[in-house]
Image 1 (tube, rainbow, N blue to C red):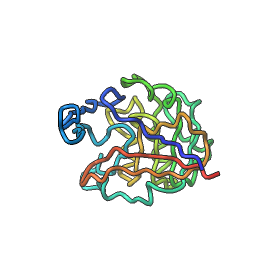
Image 2: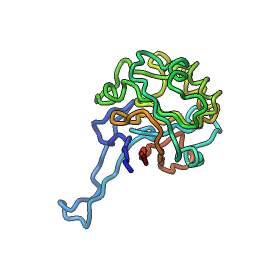
Image 3: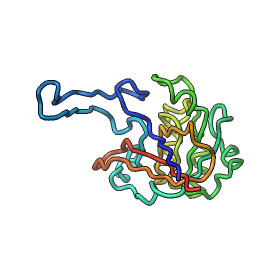
Image 4: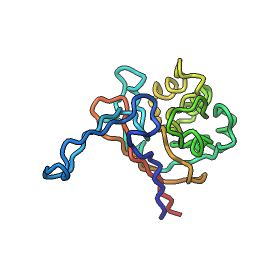
Length: 210
């Protein structure tokens, strides 16, 4: 059995969409306290995280109520590192994604923009048409290796997010797939149980039992 940790490390200098995490020392052994205690200020969408339907749909399922059956189970990783621009329907059909329940899109982001400290001007995202196609295929979770699954050309309208989240499809973002080959794995993705939240940072691993 081999385990791939696809979770980004969380720290104050990490890649982040908005404000980066802050760490404050509450107690420290060096200062004569009984233990080391820190307080972290970070957003729900920090690092590797899951978008719940409530992220874009008022009254929809928050992260503490999403199904663990969706977050744990077989997942197919598809190699789309050759794609430039948006992932389109043709790319997904060629990769054999049809009928899959959970899909992770490995793109050139993993070895490129995901490794940078600041947000890139361009990245590989999912086109709205491809998002709608995945919904039609019955996908329950789709992930990608960048800050957002959205195309860099659509961050004013967020069309892919609307298509997926309005259909109840969970989105896993910032999955580090650089060392993961194409194939079928067991996904274990556990977001923090933040009550009523629109999403949550998560520890996500892939297990290869072959």
